[in-house]
Structure formats: structure tokens, C-alpha cells
Image 1 (tube, rainbow, N blue to C red):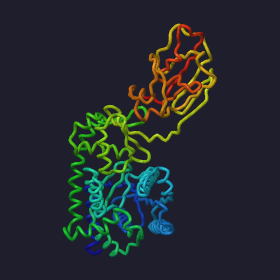
Image 2 (image 1 turned 180 degrees about the vertical axis):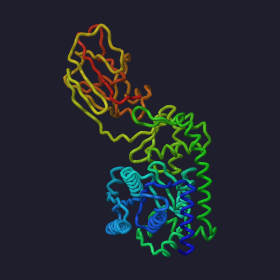
Image 3 (image 1 turned 45 degrees about the vertical axis):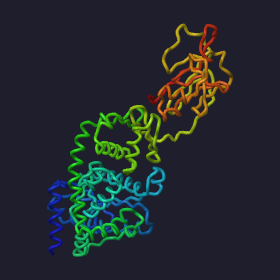
Image 4 (image 1 turned 30 degrees about the vertical axis):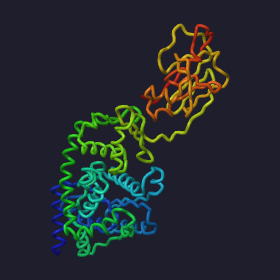
Length: 464
């Protein structure tokens, strides 16, 4: 064994031991792409498999982004696993279709599919951890890329040694790309080369091939400097993280509709860098791409009037509702328009609605907002339940003049994204009831009313 092998192997063992990544007798799943990093990682684990008493499995995901080259990678990893007598779990996924359906970039879709696949295999084989082959140069590139994106403390902390969701471990983070390649050459380790790594179309590749070499001319040890920054930022991130964990519910909380709300006064009472960390942590939990401009736009929304909104992604919107920010799935529901009839009950995805046949006026009118009584003689033959549209007006109960429905919603402090969900009952083109909110004065029960229709609107999802 030459000195380069010995050095890398001993450092690998020490790094894994000191970070507590693997314990004796563990079952470990290795994410193997076929590239030099993952093949060297496989070789290093093989060197210690017996002495550490490890059970090993290999996982390979074919993203089907490079045609025949991707298929050759898959066959290469499967063949190598067979030669070594290690079980290999391989799968093919349609990354482009996933990106389209989920409104993600190709890279985001690939990452989402990869980690879900690794977790599925980990659970199936009972592995204590999933080892990925990220190394020190990858970490430096991540720190630099995140600095340019302005992704806060955690971004500058780079790639963590552990990633708890999915029990990911990174046992090569101590090693430089050059020494990994030297180790592969000295051991004659076969590996595949990903042609997409040569393209400068992607930001990370451009940093790797163009920017970092230029920075190295200014500071020869730029990779180590960026890794040192990452270590310090990791410690700071952990400290800030503990403080935010203790007080998270004072800033953010989910509501009954699956939305996430942020307390604006609480958020703005914190220093600017903590505000950013709160926003970034929230973005991560909601799957929003982390960019400084996005953070700033959301924080700026805190100073806008209630009702202002931002589209954060194809599937997420944030709007200001009085003293809170509300993060919600973008409303893709189409306007609804349903004919309804007296004496019938209807069930929709988010509410139920019923109209009684004409009945004698009750001795006492129900005061619940979900129930209303209309004068049966005032209702026409054509009854429609529909969504709100621009230009709607009615005469709110107790008033004599018309009021635009948009103004009524504003006065009632109805959040912007709740408006399209509120059913409107109309008769012969005139609004009878803004369901759950207010009856039109023209259809109210009076002393001359001979019969009434009982209207009932029951949301199956709580509205605010």
C-alpha cells in the first residue's frame, strides 16, 4: 500500500470515527453514481467492511437525463456491485416529467427524486445511514454559490456532514478532489465520467471550471479557506438554530387550512440577520428556492398594506393579511358555477350547501353565520351558486344602497386568497347571499313574509 492510499484510508477512518458517522455492525447504504468520488467512497468502505462489521448496500438512481450515457452508468454500477458481491438497488425515473408536474427546475427535480429514492431504499434494507460522496471541493463550491445567492448563515455553512432527513452522511467531506483522483489512479479503481460536468451551462460547473481557478491565482488555498468559513458558519448556524427552535412558534405556525402564517410584529422585532434566517428556514420547509432577492421581497411585504401578495414559485404564494404573512399553495381552482334547486343538498370539495323547500317562517331566526333565511317569494326560478367575480355588488342586510363585493370583502377583512373560495348564491342574476358572510337586504324576512327558504353553507375546511 503506497503512502497516498494509506493517508486517505487512515484519514477516512479517523473522519468517520470522530464524526460518529458509522458504528460497528451498522448497515450502510452507499449512493453510487459511478463517478470517481462515489467509486472511491465504495472502495474505502470495502477496506473497512470486515473490521467494522458492516453490512453494505449500493443504491443507484438513473435520472434518464443523458440518454445512453445514463444507461451505461446504471449498467456499470450494477456490474461492479455484482463483482463485489454487494446488493445493488437501481431505479429509473423520469426527471423531466417530475420537474414539469411539480413546477421545479431540472436540478431541483433530480435532487427531490434522488433523496426520496435513497430514503425508500434505506427504509427497505434497514440501513442506519446513507453515504453520499460529497467532498471538500464540492463543499467549497457550495459555499461560494450560496454566498452569491445570499442564502444566509446556513448557506455559508456549506454541505453538512450529516443531514437528518433521510439520515444522510458525507464521509468524504475531509478529502480534496485531487487526492481522491490520485487514490483512484493508484488503486486502478474503475469509474465513469459524467459528460454534463464539462458543460458550463450550470452555475456550479461554471464556478468549478472558471471562477475557482481564477480565485486560486489570488489565493492558492481558496478551497480550504471556503471550507474553514463553512466550519465556522456551521457552528454559528447551530447556535442560531437552537435559539430559533426554542421560539419558533412565536414566529411561524400552521393553520387549519394547511397554510403557514408568520407573525409580522414578532418577525420585525428581531435583528435583520435573524429575520433572514427565519425566512430562509421557512423557505426550506416549503421547498422554495433560496435566493437573497426572494428573502428581501418577502420581508418588504411586511411593510405593504394588507392584501398585497407575491408569487414565490409555481406552487406557492405569500400574502399579507393584517399583522401576519400567510404562505399558501397557489390557488389553481377554476371559477365555479352550479345551478341549484330548492329542497336539495349539494356536496363540493370544500363545502356543503343546502336549500330547503319553502317552509313557514320560524319563530326565531338562526343567528349562525352558516345558516340564513330568505323570503321564498323573492326568489326566482333560476338559482345559481357561483364564485365571486370582479364587478359584483349587492345590498348588504341593513343597508339601502349598493356595495361592491370587493369593498365588502375589504371591510370584512377577508384575506385576498379566501375570496375566490366563498360561494355566492344568486337568483335571476341578483345576489341573494354571500355565503357565511351576509344576506342581501332585498331577500330578508319581514313581517309580510309568508314562507322562507332555509339556506345552509357548511365549510368542510375551516375558513378565517
